[in-house]
Image (cartoon, rainbow, N blue to C red; front, side):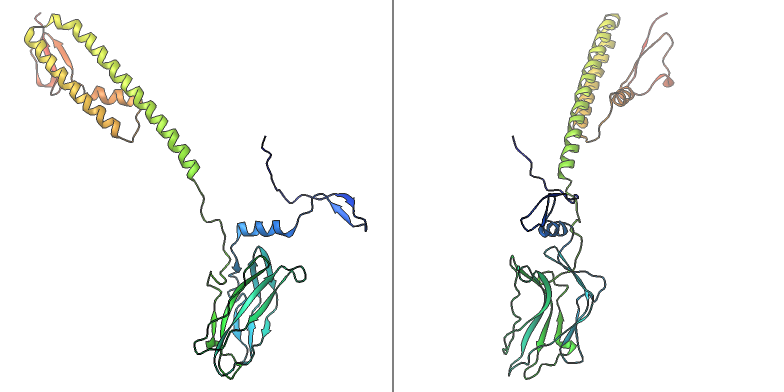
Length: 298
């Protein structure tokens, strides 16, 4: 027998026992990872879009930069910075370099926190930004890239590239629930519809066969009462009618619309020609084209 492994929370914990040092041990205690996994089910990683200045990097009167306060989600960890943070950059050498300002989640036992870190690049004639770190313990969100001009540590706003909207480096927090997988529901509805259509087609064929048998019985009962010419003409029209019925059968099989037995009976009755009897001479208003009128001598 398979046993389901279900994790459900939160439930109020009760003290089940005490450790040797007297610390209570709770029976429903859970770790942080379960909450992180939950938040990642609901939200993507990155900075929250409101306010729009969330963790934005701005120049600080040409001396370093300021990282604005904001909110973020890193690896399911909620980050809240309520104050602006001033940062500084080391002076560049004889060549330019590009530094990165990152929001770093550090899950090592001695840290277990998130902080703003400046990653120093390498001076070059064509400088490239330093790599960010992303592993099980440390995860960086790059907020901005800052070009440090040679022989200077001053920063102008034109040298700051905002990377918060780059989903590969940072990204904006959005809901992860954007679409719903309806495949299973669709398959069930389609299966039910196919079964219903097959049943309707089966009833239609039974109804057609039944009407044919009824007509054959009726015709056989009266054909001996008719002359050969009239009976032959009537027989030919019956064959024509059967061909039309076969055509109708093919059209019905190709249609996706489903009709009830009553609707099909009404449609067939409207299409069938009639055999009329009377003692008076026929007139144009006695029927429609295709009907047969048999005058019986009084």
